[in-house]
Image (cartoon, rainbow, N blue to C red):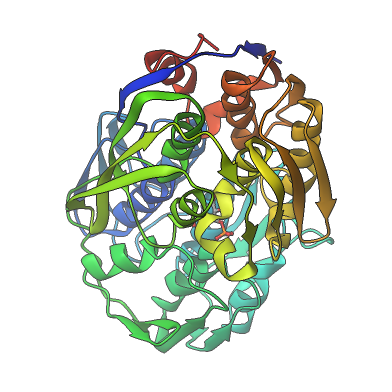
Length: 434
Ligand code: S3P
C-alpha cells in the first residue's frame, strides 16, 4: 500500500483536461459491443475500472483494438450477438456488473458468473436481480444479495414498469438495457433524476427511448443498435477534485477543459456556489450528445456552511465526500442528509469520509443517512486511509494541499480505479508531487 504525503501549498494555478468520463467509457464499450459494426471511441478513460469493461466485452467476443486513453475500435457483434464468457471479473466496477447483467440476460448461451474484488463483493446486487427476475430473467446473487452473480441469458423477457425506491443510474440502466430484449415498453420511474448517459447513448444508437415526466422507457424488442463513432468528454467527478482544490487555493485561477456537464452530475456546482465559491461555467459544443463546458474556479476565503438535502443527492452522489471537505473549510455546521446510498459505494462513504476528516483534525459526525461537519475555516492536517476507495484517496490529497500541516494518505494507489494520472495533474497545477 502506497502512503503519500500531501503538503500545503500557497497557490494553485493552471489549465487541465482531466481524464475522460468513466460512466460514458463503460457505456461506450458495452453499447459498441452490441452494435452491428465496428465503433470508434476517441479518448476512452484508461483506468482499472474501464479496463475491466474492455476485458469483459472482449471476453464475450467483441474485440477491442487500440489503447484506452487514446482511441479504440470496438468490434460490435450485434444486439444479441455476444458469446458470453463463463466468468467475468468486474474488479471494482459496480457500473460494469450492473449494466452488463442487463445486457447478458438478452444473450443466448451458458450461465455466466460475474464476480469482483472485496469491495464489489460487499455491494448490493438484489436491486438489479429482483427487477430483472420480475422481467423473467434468470439472475441470482449470493445469499446476502451481493456478488457473485449468476446470470443465464436467453429466457423470454416481459416488458414492465418499475418504480425504483432509490435513484440509481446503474439500476435504471440495467433495466432499460434488459428492456431492449423484451416485447413492448419497459419503463423506469425514479424518485429523483439520476445521470441519463445510458438513455442518451441508446437514443443516439437508434433505440426508441421514451420520456414521460419522471419516467423513462425503451421500446423492445430492439433489432439492431448502431452506436455512432464518438469521443468521450472529461469526467466531472474527476474535475471536482481540482474544483475544490481551486476553491481553497487557486491564485489566480484553475481551469478545467471540456468537462461533461450532464445535469445528473453537476449538483456540486450549486452547493459550491451556495457556500460562496466562485465557479464559472463556459459552455462549449456537446460531445457524445452530452452538454460540455470549461470550468474556472477562483480561491474563496470565508466559505459558508450549508445543508444538502435528499433531492440534491443523486446529482452529486460521487462528490459528497468533497462537500465534507469544503464544509471543514467553511464556518458553521454543514449537514448532508438523505444520502444513505453513500453507505454502499466503493466503501461505506459515510464512515470513510467522516474517519478521513477526523484523521485530519476536523470535527465530523456520522449520521445514519449522511454526515455533519463543524467547520472551523481550516483543516489542521494529519493522516487518513483511502480504505481502497479511489475518491477517498484523492480527497486526502486535496485536503493536504489546503491544510495547515499536510495530510498523509494511506492506500493512495486506489486512484487507479478512475484517475491513474491524478498525482501528475495535481503537480501540473502546482500541488506538491503527491
Ligand atoms: C454511475 C452511477 C452512480 C455513481 C457511479 C457511476 C454510473 O451509481 O455513483 O460512480 O455510471 O451509472 P448509482 O447509480 O448506483 O448511484
